[in-house]
Amino acid sequence: MNLLQQIYQAGLKHKDRLAVSQSEQGFTYTQLFQAIHQITQQIKATHVSERPILVFGKNDFLTLATMLAVSNSGRAYIPVDAHTPLERTGMIFNAAKPSLVLTTVELQSDYRDVLKDPITVNYDASVAFDWADVDLKSSIRGNQSNYIIYTSGTTGTPKGVEVSHDNLLTFTNWMNQDFEKFEHNHFLEQALYSFDLSIFSIYPSLTTAGTLVSLSRDETMNFKLLFERLNRSEINTWISTPSFVDICLLDRSFVEENHPTLQQFIFCGEELTVKTAEKLLQAFPHAQIYNTYGPTEATGAISQTLVTQEMVKHYHRLPLGHAKPGVEIQILDGELIIIGDSVAKGYFENPEKTKQAFFEIDGKRAYHSGDAGSIDPDGLVHYQGRIDFQVKFNGFRIELQDIEANLQLIDQVEKAIVLPKVSDDHKVVALVAVIQTKVELPTRAYERNYTKLLKSELLKSVMEYMLPTKFVYLDEFPLNANGKIDRKMLATQVLGN
Ligand SMILES: Nc1ncnc2c1ncn2[C@@H]1O[C@H](COP(=O)(O)OP(=O)(O)OP(=O)(O)O)[C@@H](O)[C@H]1O
Image (cartoon, rainbow, N blue to C red; front, side):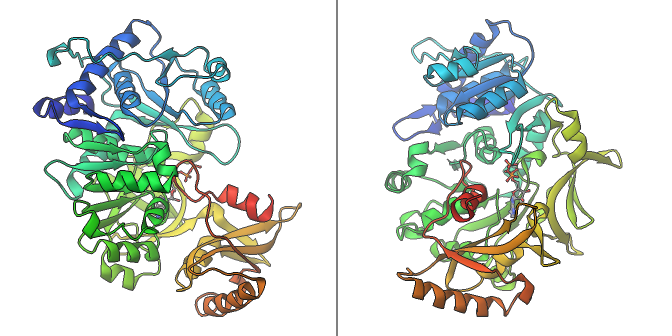
């Protein structure tokens, strides 16, 4: 059975269960397939080519149904969030050259122009529907491309990671097998559909007739709305970036007593620090907390570990876990290489970039993760930061994330990011530590004292040449649309880059 057939079978058994629960409204599995059926017909009526279809919308029921209808029509979908800036939307459109653009939101004329007159999706819940009407014969399967996700990309044209149906199937099967199971699992859906963290919720939930508890952008951006929503929602499995749970942990009500159903946390997308894990274990002592690791190019995540009290006491940096079945991780020149059935097809219609990052080992697909790491003899994988976050400073090779990890171990530090200040001739001339503290620092004198303290604490764990040359204090770190700390924005804020 392919994924859509699995979702159909699961839904058929629980027709009246909510597939999606939004802030104001819920949608059952019957409504989901009613919508998929109607939108599939709408796509078929356009008689467009087999090229991918761009889906422009928000995280909601209709956008989800549209992505699944695209799968049902035998094409790959390209999810683009409706809040994407115009210029980037245009870049994605031009790079992807989709056969069709489907939108679930009202569009301003400049977006309509850039997206070349997209078609607005229609869904009418009052039209008669029978489950037997749904035709899944043309739905995506095997090595066909399921979706293309454009990564944020630091420079130049965005790259579209092309993920096959079977990449996604093996990921979904692993999620359904290797983590906690609940009779009727309610998954938090916080990540934008345009970010591959969203597949952690969508496919495991729908293939097991679970409910997606979908947060709107307003809810994720507004603390008050977020807590109102969390307090009135039943969630069993929490999926987010660590930065997002950090925000929730700021509220004292985010504890087990108030959220007794919340029994599993799964993190991916950025480093889960010991500090965050400790706080979460304290707030939810009976919950299972998983650290998972993987880039978009290897479909969601490819390793996991249960984070225990012993682990947070034992490690400075939490391990990434063991590779999932079907995947092997090797170290080549200090870099984590991901090999096996999770490795994506490549960058969509970009053979040059594909060749730089993807290759073969013993006939299996392999991917250069760009992450530095090591592997224990028993296969436990450890993370040592992004290779591109290594700098040369005063002749020494320095891992910025290594300094960050050590700063974060200091009691007084809430969060730390270390940025290199680069001169016009591309030399690193200073290391700037940006710190969020646990206490307020009302004057410069307080800051100076704090800096002294942090330096002496840091020197207990790092070499002198790794000591940041400047310390800057901020109340809050900016997050990007994917809910990760936004280093680029932080650099602009702090260094004026
Ligand atoms: N559990 C984890 N611990 C540490 N780092 C992680 C973990 N999970 C993911 N990462 C980091 O996130 C990267 C993958 O993120 P993603 O695929 O979203 O792309 P990105 O490089 O962050 O963003 P983009 O390519 O969109 O600019 C990994 O290569 C790794 O550096």
